[in-house]
Length: 50
Image (cartoon, rainbow, N blue to C red; front, side, top):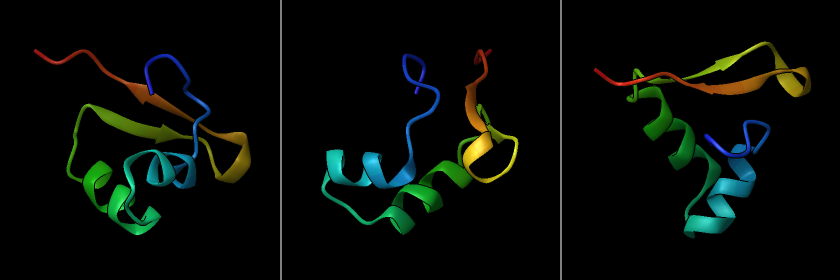
């Protein structure tokens, strides 16, 4: 996500061999990763962890 902030949850799911719902569930638990915008016009942001 740091290198490609436009990656979709479906693409991540295919890469890791899980469902897109699993990806969404895991991302929701990560406070340093957030989606900015809405739908197709948004992008991921990876914040610095302290």
